[in-house]
Length: 383
Image (cartoon, rainbow, N blue to C red; front, side, top):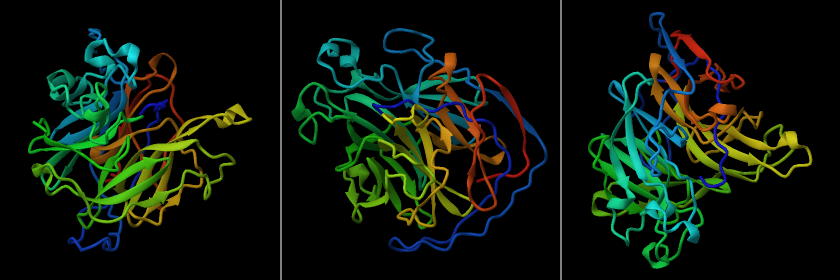
């Protein structure tokens, strides 16, 4: 989450295909065959929205209408949408900032809710720095929070560390970009308990569940890696691995039409759509002889199994911006949540649906300008 430029506005999209249901769980890493796409028809309707969303919060500086967010993650539970995100200030550990509130860190992770994706309210703090003991290993940073629902329980995963003493960190030192932690709750609003360090995790670690029920940690470490993880003993403060770490995606641009390589990959998100797994990832390009090659982009890859093999979308740069999350949005569609990186709206919360064509390729339109209001016919879903 340090080093980020984040997402630009992604234009509205339409047609997609869907998979409903799934096979019974199987053992090991072998997954059942992909279910044939099934089209869901709905009555014609429209959902109008305007980006950026009318979302603001109170920052640790006391500003009551702070609109800049990073790494927004939306999740739908019932008829309510919930949001978590990296709150201002978006800082690393700096000696000169340690006297500031929360030692110069983001104050924590606060949950927000909305019935219509337009009007938002603060729910409660899921993790708050000032409430934690001085030696808490997750007292600072609070980058890239995500909430995932597996088996009726909610899992909060985020990047954090302790900036007061190196020995307060379970790794024994300050993390250059923090460490991965995960907690569990019976309700989306928490309380999230048994927050546990994920050994050998990484900044921006995400969770994904395969069709056979196996949960994976997907971790950016220059390249992107996946590893089966066991969260069944989290309530006992235990996180364990169920297999070896495997590189699933190279940072190099091989397999695409790009002529330059990104500096690194980060912000992964895995979603099952249309009978395939889709991996969204952020990539930073800089220091190239042609400045037009530089920037922060989203790439996409496709696979039948989370452990791969993954095939990169040949476009390489699928749309400008990055570090997104996918959620079940209006009209039975998959939507993206991200932050705008355009002009006066830079850094604000935005959402858009995305499409997957019949051949399985993610389709996005070029970023639309500013605060265009869009009404989208229901058509077909892309769950």
